[in-house]
Length: 329
Image 1: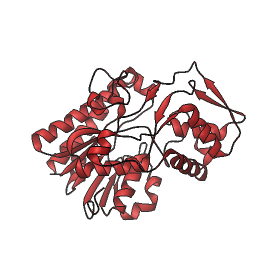
Image 2: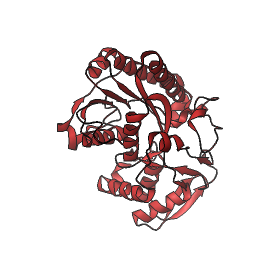
Image 3: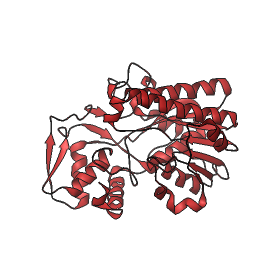
């Protein structure tokens, strides 16, 4: 990343009290930015920002109201739009219209408010869910709008596709400097540590920490994934905004791959437990391999994740145990 780029810039982060948002706010502060942080606090928590609340301008605000979005964008140099309506697969699969409408409204309000406020740079945070189920692996950015996304996330996926199309349209018509990122399988401190709605890593940590004798893992354990630490995601977002603002999507991902079975074994070891893994091969476990092509991130953005899985998992397990451990379920 460019030294001094963010010094004294006024930066608005939406969804700032969330898992990724709070880490991004920290990274921006360390880079010298003046940060406006906004969150409606449905999933986000002010505790995530507690150590730095006195260093930022924080607002609890509903971004479905255009007037509020305009006030927040006034005088900002850059907007990182992380706020979104998110839910688990059960809700996504039964509420596609709600997920589509709510997210399209959020992204539409924020980019239009940024335009009206003459904001120079805008980051659209998309998702790998935009990719079709049969996308080639490793998955390149240019297949992001091909075919249909997975049915279970239909509304949310199309909302993210539309946000990308809108971002590119604003770049083409108004000359706004726009970045688009698709972060893959994020993990780290402050994630949602629950079995029911958590991502793979925090869910496995909770299950293993509470298990006695056996740890049940969905699928046969051979599924391959890559994971990226949340601080690498925050730094990657900043790097994209420094240099790649022509509305070309960028996969934010790690090259490092691991099977779910090996991931579970690493977590068990880090927790210092003796558990037998019981694979449930009859349970739905997703595609056999889901990893991103990171060529554009490395060659055009000039960024590579710095935290390997071994380091990141150790930090994440330690954070979980120090912040409630079993009570977090």
